[in-house]
Length: 191
Length: 198
Image (cartoon, rainbow over all chains, first blue to last red; front, side, top):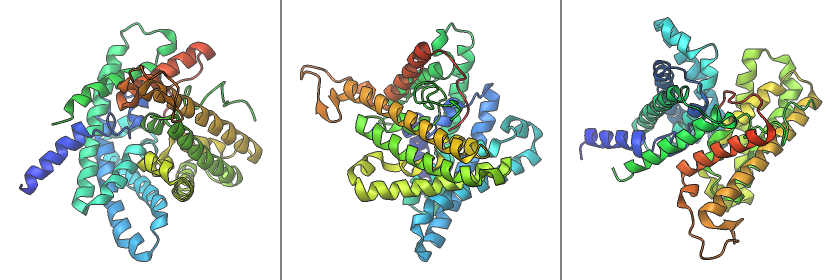
């Protein structure tokens, strides 16, 4: 199998069969973000995907080239968290420079919100292979996160117009609809 | 304690939606829910302890970063404790043990603890942690009962019970947590809900 085919298969696996939000359950934040419009969701999702890719690659380097040689493996979580926060902050800064619209969508504490389960999870899962695999785990996993965020924003837009029982409004109904989407994602098993 | 958070009154998981990631991922059994809940509560208490001590000296922006680093450090401790003393539990919780580092329960709780005084920080951390652990255990127990017909590994339903496989799957976990939150709101009335976090 060529590298390209392998990469494509890996893409399908990360986005659909092993989706970070609906299958691996590492993106609870996606459920909570009041994404607003689908467009905002796409921007936030794309930003998160970038952070996931960059921090997964950087964390791979930090772990294999610094922590393991130094015999400081037990510090890995602290190092990963610091690297993730730093890359989230720098990427947010860069994106805001490039486009004010993106900056507005990310909000004031975009960087703080970006350090979530999905970002750290991508770094942890990506540790198994080489650096390319680590970066691709972050990037493709992030695309799966982006897809989930857009799908959920779409559902939430529809929910605005439906009659939901008072106690189920907001987060509860979002979770139940996310469960239904997760059920649909199970159909991808076997792809 | 100012009663801002509570075990029943303002449950961090069921009302505020904090720490949702592991709440759906690992609560396939009551024991997993309990283990994860206690581990997270312990890390939260330690983070609140330190933030209660030093939080007042930090400005708003630094608080989040310091909380994150502390939370990662105490998540490492939790992982070492689980790996050393409860290896079977550690294996079944898997990657979600290190992910305690970015639990929104700790990140929000720790940031809030800063600058609120030492006593209030500890009390809040303790109450939120217990509330979270109780909710996690209950969710795990319901999913285990429906999905396997057992409670803490012991068979409680008659052998004729056909396990509801969905309850043990991610999809079922999301739905059951949503329903649990809805029931909680119906019983305890609505407060602020859907606060942001991971």
